[in-house]
Length: 323
Image (cartoon, rainbow, N blue to C red):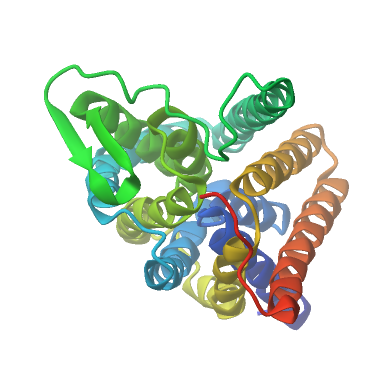
């Protein structure tokens, strides 16, 4: 392995781990395009990302569980259902690869989905901020779920997630959607699971972070199996990524205790916008600029997260944040 590329990938692992621990994402939405820009075929980049994401998510879940940020029942049910979606997404991307269209379609999918989620979250943040200033909404940090009152039977409860009840159909569709995105784009699904848990189901932000990583662990583990059997995983590269990610996950998870949920959400939206622009540049034929933008923006955000942790430690207290 080229030493320079190995060091770069290890650094990317550190950055991804920091973002994963802080946002509840496996990091595939960042790692897959990075590996692709570094010269790996898109499908191999997807398979390798799954291997790194699984290890990353395992460390993150264990850390967030100790912090009390995981709703096990909700995460396990959505995670198991997501496996079916991963299979559907994988089959589609392999068909597209046979036609020579996998790279283009996956990148277009990134651009559309990430831009939609980021704009949706930013609009929600500024609208809620405006309502708070006008005194027309509650002064709490966590936005309410859109489907809490959707009670089409059967209905199940998730006490640890602070969601009294939600229709099983909402959970099933959520799991299938997260899994499909995972299998098609080579991501753990956390960048979809996190906003879905917060905005649609109504899970508090920090609980959504840990639960999102649990969901990601299921989808990425299945992704390893199907892409590994197809010979589309670079195991050594995945281990290099994971080596840097282990430390980053610890930092990111701990930093969530020093930051308000609203700030976590808006930083997450800004990260997705940066990734969207980077993938768009790649699609337009500017891979070098794309890679630089991706690494610089993610590194800056990881630096901000590290600063949150350092400031919190220096203050010697836990910030009184809303969940």
